[in-house]
Length: 308
Image (cartoon, rainbow, N blue to C red; front, side, top):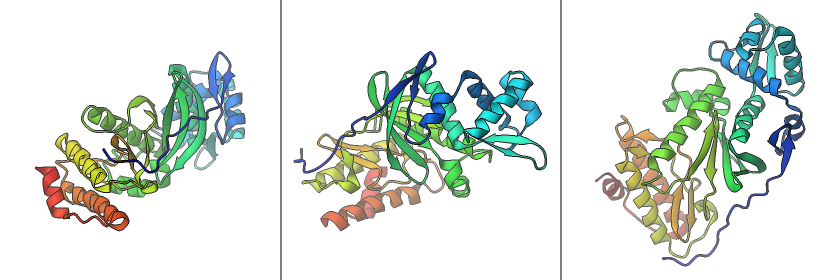
């Protein structure tokens, strides 16, 4: 076991408050809006979400049937949601509406609060395809990962991943979240990955990762940690998974070992480019340890060890 030089544990600094009959959330971006949302606001958002499965812009006359509200009530709710900037409107070629990501966040968080999420705290990370917050679920600190894949890089995601049908970006993000959630569940008893607590739409609730990000940490026994990463990669390969985006930025290290995060882009070992993607993962890790610690490992031999 190596000696430990530096690291951090994520502390949850969440700020709860009450909303109607249950707990609601203060976020760092839309706190005043979330406090004002009412039951029928959510029903209207959900109705637009249903309509977006068939329409890029949901025709205004269809929202009442999708949300199961009277037309007059829908009109009132749409005006509120527009004022809160949770939906968008078009008049060409017809009057239609779509949810934006703030509205989709509200839908996911509304569901998660009914299941056990009681607070959301600070933004602790922003990536190409996700935003990460601290939270509290069932009185325990958690991490909430909001997928943004379809919004920030729709063309790249649909080109490089099995993103399914090219629906609206909220559904691309939803599929990315579900894909990662399923991977974490499949790997949880074999590979050191975050524990899954809950999932709704484009949001995954996960256990707090121990230790710190590899890129931000200096360890006293880098050979030991490199061996641990290779072993975890080998375990995931034996389960049929290749991370395909492995780097020092999605590995957490602690005195107990390593934990690999960010799995929405995984590929199966039967994928036509599996060998190339595995080799790329290995090269990324070996290059990092060579740059920072001067460790030299043969990439081809490491890949062969992982595969066999």
